[in-house]
Amino acid sequence: MAATFGKYPSLDKQWRKMMFSFYPYLSTKNRNATQEEWKIRRLIWDFKDGKAFANVAHLVANKLIQLYGKETNNIIFACVPASSAEKNEKRYKHFSSMVCQLCGMYNAYDHIKVKGEKSAEHDNVSKSEIHNKQVIEFDQDFFKGRKVIVFDDILTKGFAYAIFANKIEKMGAEVLGGLFIGKTVYSN
Ligand SMILES: O=P(O)(O)OC[C@H]1O[C@H](OP(=O)(O)OP(=O)(O)O)[C@H](O)[C@@H]1O
Image (cartoon, rainbow, N blue to C red; front, side, top):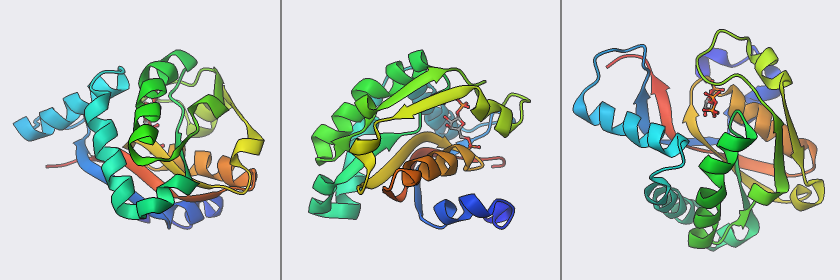
């Protein structure tokens, strides 16, 4: 997010926090991907479709235990909602539950309701327009005064993560940082 620092002061504080991604995700703008890069793309695309989530759940839970140890029992795990309620359920319902079973965190899935849709992925719509189309309802009592880890499948510019983290903090929670399967890269 270094290139974006200073342009969006309200988001900077989220970008200064721990932001960990497991793999580089080669943008589809790069036509030539290696076998390894294709493996990562497939993993993430499958995950977006609600498949292959168990492997990712283990990866994420182990990382959270490594980062926070027994503190995981006091932390909420919250996934940045997908672009529609249907995609959100397919992608996160079982995944989020499994991560929390494995590492002992509180599962935010049932405490966040997604309504409406936002345009998905690499479209030409401005970010403000994207977020205006989707309404996210939070169970405020669940979040108030708690520590929260935010999860998303892909980190590109960091807006989805930081905007969501700000919404969570507006309810009186503290976001510790973000975990991502892949971080978009544009060249080999
Ligand atoms: O870091 P950013 O530049 O904000 O982009 C990251 C977001 O973009 C993707 O979502 P997308 O809009 O493609 O919708 P989806 O989650 O339904 O796939 C991804 O899942 C993140 O939520």
